[in-house]
Amino acid sequence: MCGRASDIKWSCTKSLLTFSDSLTEEVMYYSGKRRGEDGIAAVIDFLLSNARLVLGVGGAVVLGIATLAVKRLIERAGRPPDEKPDKMTDSWEELSLVSASPKLLHKSIEGVVMKRIAAATKKAELSQPIPLPSPEPQRCDADPPQRRKHMDLCVMTFVDLLQQYYRTRVCLSAEEVSVAQQRALDIATEIKAFLHSKHPGMPLGDMTLAGSLIDNLQVVKADHACLIVPLQLESSLWTPIAGEDTFLGHPQYCMVRRENLEYFPRGRSYWDRHLLAGYLSSRLVSEQLGKTVMESMNWPLLTGTLECEVRPVLGSPELKLEIQGLTQSSYESGERFFITVLPTVRLGEMTLMAQREITGSFDYIWYQSLYTSETARLAELDKADSGVRRKCLKTLKAVCCNCPSLRKLNASHLSNVILHMSENEEDWTESAFADRFLQAITELIGYLETGILPSYFKPNVNLFQGLTEDDIDEMGYMLYCAVTEPEILLI
Image (cartoon, rainbow, N blue to C red; front, side, top):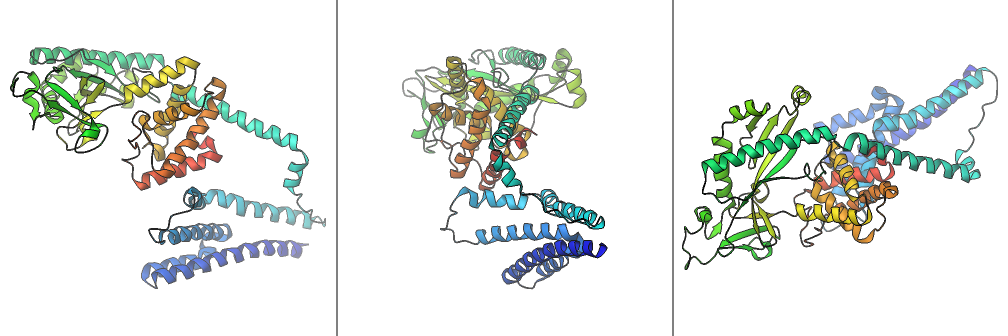
């Protein structure tokens, strides 16, 4: 009986060893053929040939499968530049072989085999015939209603998980939002008073707070807001130039041109001091506000007045303030709140901002932000049909914020995906929340596959333009895995 159990163990183990050896030999042949017998190749060959001794049976099989997957990726990388993959599955699906993590492979191969061996040994010792495992697929097919019930249960489970995620991980408490808004408003009031006292002749409009914190679209934690500083320009002296008409040709990179210099010479407008080659310089405007707000204000005194620590962020292209200690708990945990000061020009229907972190080294380029238009459109659509577009947007933002692989997807990307979906999808009711969430994941994969996400309001703008190929591959693979297991996004 003991001999019979040993034969069974040896039979199962031998089949695994044969499979591992065949994979190892194939990878070793490929490695030697491509890289020669140099030092690194010799070390790799030694590790592969001794994987069974070092890692054991299951480890050798796992190493063989992973190495074979790497071989396929290397083969695909060696294709000619003009030869393109047939499908998205040629890239992201094959990557699942590499990342089908060793824990899963170890559990599915070695664990199952060892269970079979243990069962066979026990039966052999009792001198009973070894029962053959019943085919599970046939039992499932024999009872289709039970299978459908199980699938429905899985769907409902994800719906419940998604709703729970939204309540506990996405939404901010009313108290947290209220405290952050009040602190931001207090700081904005101090900045406004200081600017008027320091530069009484500077024509500025009413400064307002803006951003996701004010629009109830901020997720995970209240950590940032924007302070809009509108410049009052004379419409007869200044003309906005659309991005398509500038030398850059970027639809969102606009310019502000000084007009009628022959009739209204330089000096008629306060902002003439910031002219550069006949155009209003976003760099010069930002530098003046930076020197006034960031360098001249008495921040230690303001810290004592507001009972929270406020200081400018130095070395950043943005005009940004850092606030620590909105509450006692946030102070102890080291959480920080940021306020970005944005000089803004409104001429006609165009809203232009001095965002040098986006426009880079172009001194006279102003960035046309579409955030207000996108947010207003989502609110309008939700109000018309009591939809969950904004809820879906907030959930997607939280998922991307909590998942390191998806952090390159920002609010603009996600807002435009939902706006494009709204053109064809009519059901945005609460009951369809999970369906729209999964549909947004699928839509994102399609956009990442082509590398193009057109702006909803400016279709000739590719919102993926600033992403690298590696960024797109990493995000696409993560979302591709979430198609079959969406729960991984809610971890």
